[in-house]
Image 1: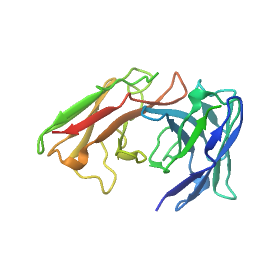
Image 2: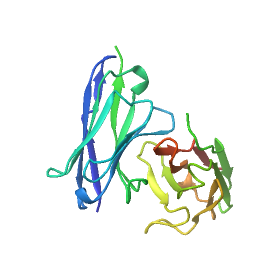
Image 3: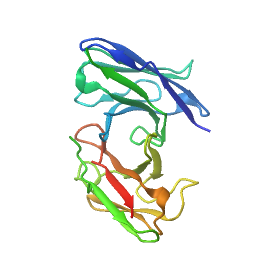
Length: 118
Length: 110
């Protein structure tokens, strides 16, 4: 059974940084692309970033490009999201997600809440 | 803002059929498969339909998906109280080089 467990969320001041982690299990991690998707409280889903199985291909939403960095450690079965220069509008639940290919999302974690506020 | 457009709400009585539309463009739905997700209150999204019309194991056959051109739809037949949730469509977008989600539809069982 696919399991994705996010951690690292919390309260951070505007302009600050935070690093999210996602522990993956139940599948061969280095066979699949991985995504981050976020959802502001009471709002819809917003795709954030995707990384290919070996990290060779990466894409970001325009809203986070230049501020967020996605990475993965295939030896440890972990996905990461380094978030810098955080803004109030980055406040959201952040979900780690697994696809079948680079272009789709099939499985979701339970999410971790990031709050950007002074 | 979302690239895929859905109606904000849909409703029906138990047993009825409800259909949710998802309108996109040539760079997303017109070129790629559509995915549908169900999000129950306070929980993470869950895959409902993949590759536009395929159901994962465990998803009741009351749920069905279809795609035509640059639009897609999700149908829920035999509506049940446990179907009250938010529903989102999604597809890869070649112009944005990323996934795009629909605006979301809240389904209410009257």
